Image (cartoon, rainbow, N blue to C red; front, side, top):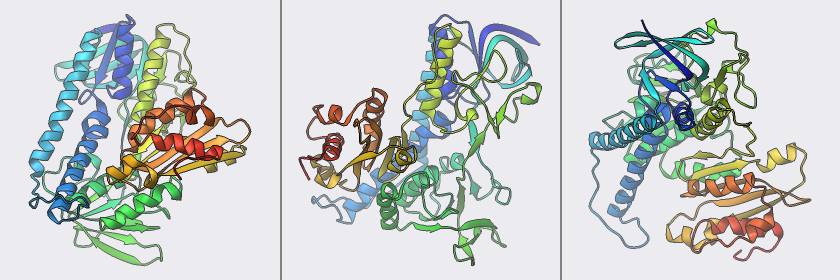
Length: 465
């Protein structure tokens, strides 16, 4: 068995892990990173990046189809579009490969040693890695667990055959004619919308009484309208029961208690994600847990000295940018810098049609926290840039304290609003007040003007409505 000794061992090369390793390398820390699959983890390989690539393909296809049908309001016509799914997947895979190579290059630049294989704890300082060339024993002063998460599998609807996870959906080289999506959260709706735009007949089955249950009805209403316009059938309050007797379909219980069968070429299960820790040998450690997740403190430290955990293994919000920020922080803590987790907000985005962004507290959350609030909401129907992009649905909403106008939260729904998330996060992180946003010059014509106007509205003197 080959032995490796290092100061820092990072297990998992997803967004959190590779950022942690790169930053540690930059700080001169002797660092090793272990990855069982491909560098970049779920987000880069089978999640965030490839899904956005396929969403873009679907959007372009829909535009071409509208032009062919004479549905564009500005007079553009085109021939009937055709899609080569194999070529689209190859293009998506090419982007992923370029990013894989980029992560590898950045790790090498930071002088991080990369070990490919499955890691398993022997104790709090020692890990065995099964590699293609045999086992390696790695001894480290500090270890960071950054193994991410995996799709939740329903026991009565296991993955295999025509039952697929988001990973399988992004690898399809043929468009399913009929797609049933189990789960009306952001993953299911993002992929379901994309397949509907490409021509699939999509049905969404959601157990709760609304789609995107983490967001308020005002934010999700434009998304629900878009789903309906695409011909997507949304069944809320419905429970998946299992495959049909002859296979090829899904049995469900509808909101009124009746059983129904849905025919499907593929059944996409998107009911959540679970921490990827089953193969780590955590039973060799003594870690405090929060259910399935590893409990951490304000420095991402676990209950065992010298072991940290970041990203999805630590629970919600299971977002790549949270993991990245945690990874950078932990690397600096290992280097001896005084860091703690003191973030004011973590923006969350749904890449549905239209997109949804939420940063900080919603109006309901702010009131539940005991704040008297001022709200300002500005519709994209009154925004010139939105009108010229044919994306007038939606709005920007700002939530502020009534007494001192401190901004507590910002939400938006509309085409392209994901790009406003940085401004929203920065405003909250810097402690902006309504007057700060209203007094900042926002370039014209941009969607960002709706942010300024929402603050003006909260102050009682919006200019364009």
